[in-house]
Image (cartoon, rainbow, N blue to C red):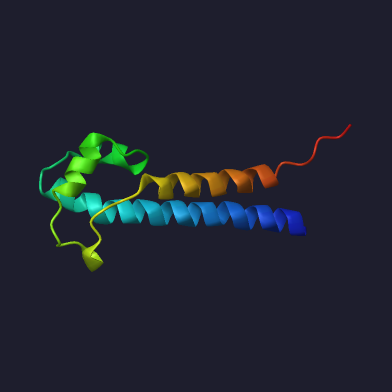
Amino acid sequence: MTSSARTSLLVAAAGIVFALLSVAWWWLIFSKVVANDYLTVRQAVTCIAGASDLCTLAQALCTDQHLYGIRWYAPEAFWGAAAVFVVGLLLSVPPARA
């Protein structure tokens, strides 16, 4: 495996790991939101990638019962992870030959 292939694989893998971490962060917050019937699971899933008024309101209704007192989620974490993954994929594309 060449250095370039290894680098692209590592960057793409980092993107996947970061995406999993962002989904875990989302679930940490929105599992309580769903359990308290503030949102349905379907509504909460939309909050992974975007911050709508509904998502913001549901987070504002959270109590301090979350692990480590974390009461908010930032969708930018998911998009950042997606960007890192895409960069890893783009690094794996061979250069065009003239």
